[in-house]
Length: 147
Image (cartoon, rainbow, N blue to C red; front, side, top):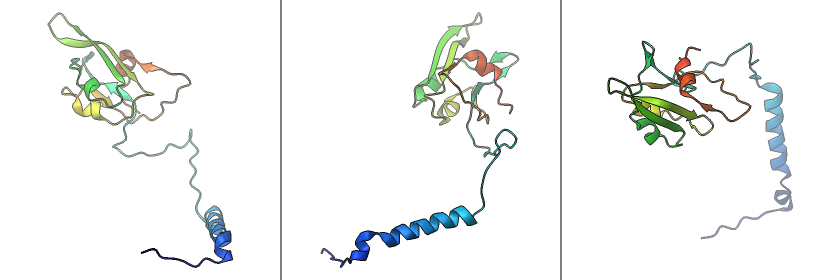
């Protein structure tokens, strides 16, 4: 059943809706507390579950990664690329480990899929870049998530 509403000329002008919207805007602009963080001096506190810059854990200078290819397989953005090699003791290791941060959605699935707990997401959120850059293995090893 279709309900017919009577509309007058004042409803078709939308003037009351415009005025109520302006009143809400003015009230929020004048009477609410301003939330501004002066960034370089003040840092925002994020949750402990925040997922930021990637890094590879290393024990005694040797990375934990065994190049099992689980992280690139499970990655929904397909931003992780690994080239595997073999050490003298027949153990696999990543010769090349690259992460394209512009494609990464920081979902943490690579971290969950890793059986050796080698790849981690740190709490570092300052990743601004002026050009497209692929993060290489050396950078991932240097970055320990210390900030």
